[in-house]
Image (tube, helix red, strand yellow):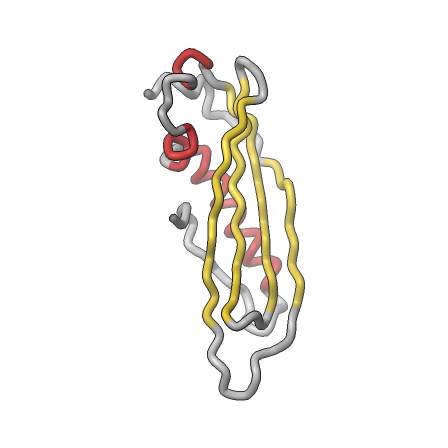
Length: 129
C-alpha cells in the first residue's frame, strides 16, 4: 500500500498542549508515570487525510503533573488506495508521518517538563501501543 501517501512533505501543526502541576508526592511515595498515545485518521476530502497523534502522561497516584500534547498533519493521499486500507490508523502508525509527529511531541514534552519536580521528561519517540 505504498501508493496511499502521494507526498511525504508535511507541516506538523500543534493542536493542543496542556500542562497542569498537581500536588507533590508525599514523603517516600512512589509515583509511576504511564505514557499513552492515540492516533486518529480523518478523511478531510478526496485528497487529504488529517493524521493526529496525541500523547498523555498519567501518573498513579495522580501526582507531579497532568500532561497532554496533540499534533497533526494534513497528508496528501490517493483516495482509491486509502479506501482499500482495512485500518487506516494501523497503516499510518507505521509511516514516517507518525514518526515525525511523535518526534515533535517528544520535544514539546521535554520543554514543558523542564521546570517540573522531575526535570525534563524524555519520552520514547515511537508510538506507544
